[in-house]
Amino acid sequence: MLPPPVLALAWMLEKHDIDFYRYSDAIAKSPLRSQRLVEAAWPRRPRDDAPYRLSYLAEQYVGSHSSPPECEEIDSLFVPDQTLGVSLARCH
Image (cartoon, rainbow, N blue to C red; front, side, top):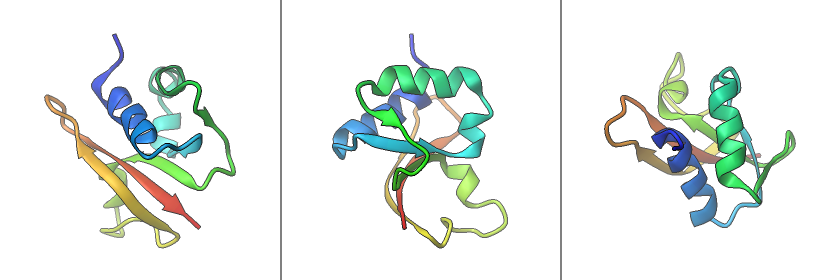
């Protein structure tokens, strides 16, 4: 069974018909989550130069209280029964 945050991230990619994405450092620091995301999102694939970025909502508010200035949030979702939300942004 895939973790709810992973399912939410994969669902946002599918909903917005995104083929290539990158994920935040916080997601990358968890090999289990990042690998499960790649699995759940297939055939969509991670790519370092992809304009679409997946992250946890909490990351956006550390220090700056907003998304990174080069990114515009497209979608976000609070994951039921979890203490976090997830976000999809388009970065320039």
